[in-house]
Image (cartoon, rainbow, N blue to C red; front, top):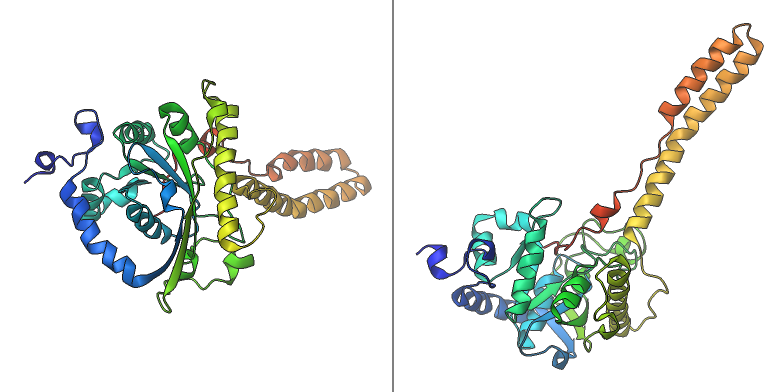
Length: 328
């Protein structure tokens, strides 16, 4: 039977509304639920804060490519079936594509004209009463101590546009099962051995807090300032919950990955420019003692612009591209 007859075609190809196959969802529950019970120990708190019905956004921290399954298990046992915004490349794998489409997951096409489709489909899913999973950071955290980074504004935009509640969730433990392969090489992140480590059995700690109060943004234009302030409120709630799980005080300021990348680019460019600057100084000194000083100086001046040029940061538009997908 074709996917269209089963009702699992992507929403942009069919009538309005979020589409999925109950059969596919049941199959994933039958396979994954006992597997996750057997693989992981659990410390779950706050499941009562996850609404049993109606469109809702689950906004969580992201520390490992393994935490989507652990988080999905928590949400399912709280009475909801999770719908993720996932990288479109995952839909390129034949069998995986069937599973993702069948269970109603939403593809995100990064840096393309189709990126807006994810926003449209996410809005449809919320209006249809789905439980939508967001990682506001956009990727696994790059904070050396694995605290949440600054967030992207997609979850806040969806919440303020649709009126859906945002339930903050923090998880801890997935980094021990599967450390993020692109994580920082210092701090806690740098101390973790890369790869998958199922033994001994890891404990997944997950806590859900009450919905974030975004009422003060109601009726305001969805401009950059509004979305940034609402996003900061969401990330603060997630970070506070993670501090509770870890029994530690969170950092005063969240790790800003884009700012760190920009500083590293500038430092690398400055380091690369130092030898060139020294060479120009040597040429200028020789020119003073030489009878052809002006000609040499002109040559030196002409070389300076070619040596300059610290790499600029990514465009602001690209940094704020919405929404960002889970890495797994």
